[in-house]
Length: 622
Image (cartoon, rainbow, N blue to C red; front, side, top):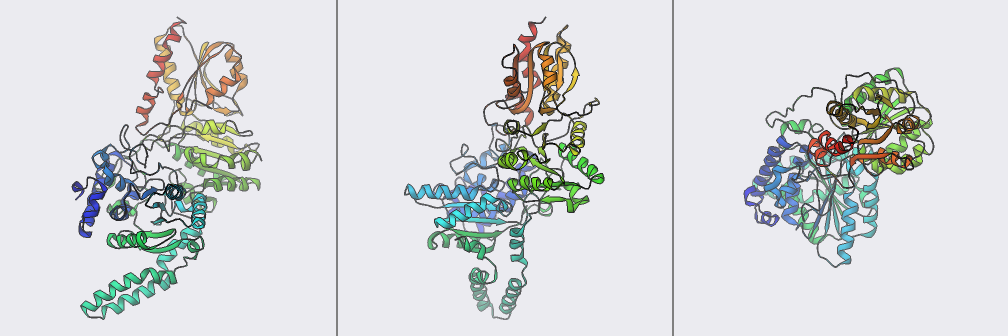
């Protein structure tokens, strides 16, 4: 069936039976590609059926469909003229793992971060009405994303304006980590409430006693009445009080019923509507159904058994999580905070060991930061683990609620630097830029697994100021080197030299180390300084003041935006000195998806590219 779909309009010609076959084909296509490329498998498999129903009823070029995050969008990409390129998913030059307005006109809005779809869809609908364009806007949001405050702000505004728009709540009872909070319990209680299930059983039992033809008519009538019955039984007053017409819960895999509901809303209902769909994450792939957290976002896997290639060494996240558990054994004041990313940030072991000391706040980064400040204000030692790209959403709270008040919160910034296949929306390359200007904030960038442990241990007993520790995605680096003990604001000197200072920030120090060795091997008589700054803020001014009197060139390597990075900070500090600063960092552009090694080479952050760039400088010292 999939071979017959060249454009979304072709779906409208299919019967319900053919749509079911199409759904199977789409799931198989997703599995075939993601088992090689990796990706967000479970969310996209769970969304196939309602995406097909949407495309059966609506015209995506007129009725603009806005996804939240985009984890669910693979079927949409396949069915909107991208099937022939779908095998390039998440590869450099290929199609993105998220919706992208620069990739296709069918993508109404570029996404990648949570809880944005309702706001964007409302803005689109307001603009459509202003321009007198036909059609509606449709926001697709997961139950996890609905825990984000921005989603509630948008619901409130949409209900006030009473625009003709649709919000589809995809309730799979699971965001990246199990959802938390009253809203999640409400959605779950709907499905297990005694009154609802008792009534449904009574209706079903009654139907079995009826003659065949009458039973068929009765069952059809009962299904038609279910929405009205649910409006009586389910406490849906929450959405209705916001001004939405609430429909559901509805089986998100029942394509014929979904099409009937979508058609009725399209033709009969005025004002904003929220459709509550219940879906199964990972549907169609047994091991993704049973382990949706693992298959939320995953690398290549064996499509027959779901196995992935075993890791030889610990990831940075695992090093962090293991060390925090170790520290918590002797310090009962240590608590951990995460925003729906318990597994992703390495806190699963902590949660298993100290469940009463881990707080998963849901997808609510702003709340997580201020919650941590409140905990610290009473003497607890909060460690909040958060991806660099998501910390962007809580900058005001970092400034106002943490740094201004000098609360000793420790912000553990995971995925700092290039993350690869997830692309521009997830590259963690701005945290140094937006944190360095914040007073009262210490920033550390460990170079290796052992140094991350040292940083965490040091932060436990440092109560003067808040601390941020940044580390990347992937396998933690291990050096055959014993790091010096950590002293406030002090750098680590690996080699004392002259003329040239090579400075590697965080995990980019491995590139600096390789560069140093290549220079030693190829340039006799040149002996560069090799520095691990460790403290980005406050940096070791005493050391760098000494080095600038011995060196005329600073070569700084870092995976952060060049504007506002560590090189930028040194450039400001030594602007009046005769020091030439050579910055190798992320250029002033958004970096697309692809393997991190490939991306580093393309933007000039590989050892080879840096060596070739500075060779003319080295030649002058021969």
